[in-house]
Amino acid sequence: MEYKKTYKGLILFFATLCLILIGGAVLFGIYLPMHMSRFTVCCISASMAVLTYIIYKTQYIYWFNGISYEEAEKAGEKRRKAYAFAHLKLFGILFICQIVFSAAMALLRASQWVDFTAGSLALCIVAIYTVKIKL
Image 1 (spheres, rainbow, N blue to C red):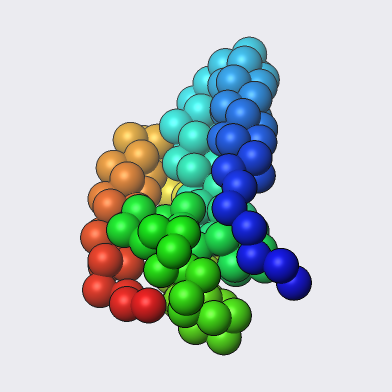
Image 2: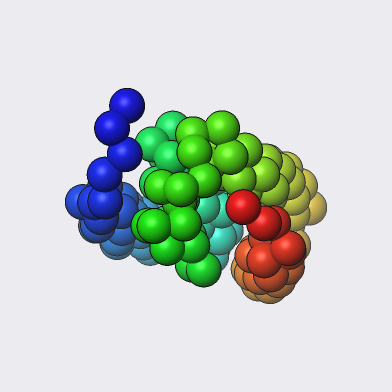
């Protein structure tokens, strides 16, 4: 596989995410307004897991902050995949935990702000934790 510098996939990903969030906000706003924040936090968690999966498959680790294209190219396929997989594992676990937590909070009829606060905090913690991951 030829390794080349491109941001088309990243731009397409964020454009699609915006459409999903807007569509979800409209639908949840009409039919389930009490779960709109839950949807948003779960969607953001899912998007991070999907983005890290895309980065893992394409090896475009320079999409992560702190890695240049030149560093990624020099690292080689094996190191790029290992670096991306470490991120994928963390954001995948976050997504699964967020879904389980949101479902439990919905069943317990807890405020959606509990989900929003916990999900946002968890996302920040995982994102900060990924800074330790080195190429």
